[in-house]
Amino acid sequence: MILLDGKKVSNDIKNEITEEVKKMKAKGEKVPHLAAIIVGNDGASLTYVASKVKACERVGFESTMIRMSNTTSEIELLDKIEELNNNPEIDGFIIQLPLPKQIDTQKVLMAVDPDKDVDGFHPMNFGKMALDMSTFIPATPFGILELLDRYNVETKGKHTVVIGRSHIVGRPMSILMGRKGFPGNSTVTITHSHTKNITQITSQADIIISALGVPNFLKAEMVKDDAVIIDVGITRVVDETSPKGYIITGDVDFENVSKKASFITPVPGGVGPMTIAMLLKNTLLARELRH
Ligand SMILES: Nc1nc2c(c(=O)[nH]1)N[C@@H](CN(C=O)c1ccc(C(=O)N[C@@H](CCC(=O)O)C(=O)O)cc1)CN2
Image (cartoon, rainbow, N blue to C red; front, side, top):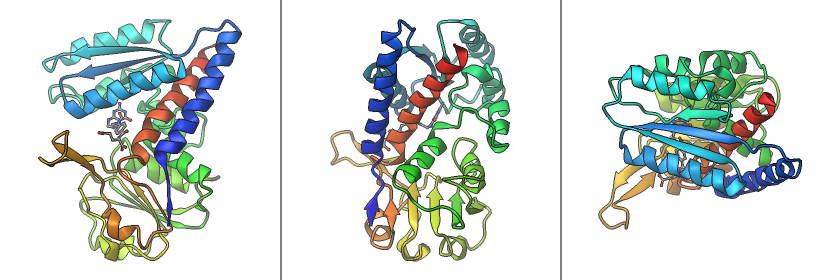
């Protein structure tokens, strides 16, 4: 079994981006600037945005974090988005998800200038991705493609089963794994909460990408020998004995599934760190497209 080490690969990517930024600085160019809007006080979301800001500092990007209260109205958020759309200093920005209930997420994401949409969530960018056009690919699926690429995991002609159909991971992942090129060219099945007899489907898969958010959902008996396992789950499970009071748990029963897998991502240290690295890549791309 080979561990797909997202922590290591994301560090490699950050080092590569740092070199690009040094070249920009040497030419007297302005460095990429990422902004992140966070609405509310969700602990996990605050951690992720803090990691994004830290990653920007590490590679030499500028960053701006905008905190808005939990009671922010949709109009107030749309005004802030308009401000960022029109701010020439900002190359790309994200709105950290999930958003509080009073805000229509889809409406908000559609308000982002597609050229600054470094999360790749705007329908125009999603459509471009589906049509194999060059665009911002959502960071988590982009990170998974990069991991498969850097570890030379064969995807052509394989059967990929995606568990979960979220707009952020499952849906784009299913499109990307089936597209022409590498990684891709695989035959994709997408499963969700209404899928019947899921074990029958997962046990035929060469590659399983689980983005369900149910701790230890994928058991060894659901997986065939030598399958490639990508675990996108990052659930915080209460654990009084750990210093933080919780442990991060993936969708995959790692201890048992890893004994059968050919390649597997750990949680933590797998797909999560790749998400941040690929957001930086998208921000670099946004900067290049604007200049
Ligand atoms: N606007 C967005 N919102 C959300 C996205 C996104 O891509 N754009 N994805 C997730 C959250 N996310 C980034 O925003 C994210 C999740 C997890 C990690 C990560 O590095 N996880 C670590 C564990 C960290 C921990 O202690 O909690 C790991 O897996 O090793 C990074 C980014 C939803 N929202």
